[in-house]
Amino acid sequence: MRLNGELVSTKSNVLIQNYSWHLKLYDLKVFELLCSCYNTQYYDPQKNIIKISLNDLAKELNDKSILEGGYYYKRFKDAIKRLSDTSIWVTINGNVEHLLRMVNTYDIIYNDSTITCYMSEDYKIHMEQHPKGNAFVEFKIVNGMTSKYSGYLYNLLRSWDGLDQVTFDIDYLKNELWCTTPTYNNITIFKKTLDNAIDEVNSLTNLNVSYTTEKKGKKISTIIFYIDKDNKNIEKQKDDDIINQINEQIEYERLRNDWLDNLYLEPIRNIIVEILKTTEKQITISSIDYDAQNVIKIFKQINYDIIVSILTKINERECYNNGHYIKYLKEYLRSSLYLEALQYCEYEKYKQLLNG
View 1 (cartoon, rainbow, N blue to C red):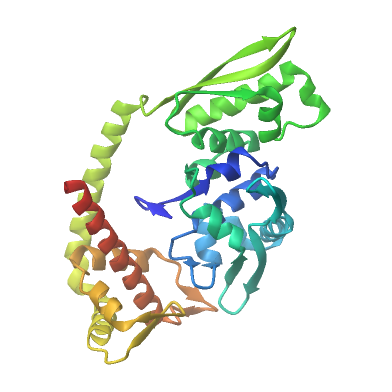
View 2 (spheres, rainbow, N blue to C red; view 1 turned 45 degrees about the horizontal axis):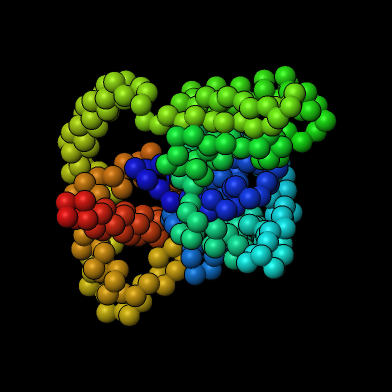
């Protein structure tokens, strides 16, 4: 899903706390991206697939090297292959063992440079609202990490949101962080790995994590984490927010001045008019059929700011397809406008709830 323009995942706490995927760092980042695509423009809930262009993939992963082909493209393909080959045994209702898999298979379509990920039913179950809660994890944070241990620790701590103290058996924690080789029987090496992971979590997130240990006999048996949330960098965040507001206002004024001269105004207007006057019962958007009346209702919410944001995205987007500029301009605009209008409706509903 997206929150304030950023991709976030809401994996079930059970999936994080009870099972260990043991993924390499790059595989973990791709896995987090797939989890974050749920309930976004990339996800089709009817078909349970994620469809994303290579350009969008490179943008979301902040990794343009994928577009260069060669080693980097192969690295991505190897990662998604490993993810589709990865499964774990889970216990359901105490008496059923189920082989859980998040991804079934993939298609990479050369003609339009898109990747289609066919997700499993387990994916839907563990991304939807889970009875035992869901962990809120920002994708850009995991994507910015340099250690898989940091990623695993961050996921684990977020699955215990609301608590300022969490206690783990040391063997359980080692397994969760994938510190399972004999090397980590040396407590000094394990603590060094843990310290580095905590340093990265503290530097990249709004969590401030520390820990103490408890012994059983002569050996450390328990790790106690202390989690302080949202209490650091507050003043810096306020300053950043003010700067961002000023920059956004400057950009808004620039777009406003360029509005009437923008070459994309006419095709956008034509699409809106065409959809609002349609007599069809269904409208196809992004290869999905929608009820026409619902689409019209959504489109009527479009305002000046939304169209400006669409124009900005079109102008900034790399819209090249086999050397032709926006080969399917009309279809692209229709999809983009619909998604923007849909998000606007959801925002308005959320604002009404807040205002009570």
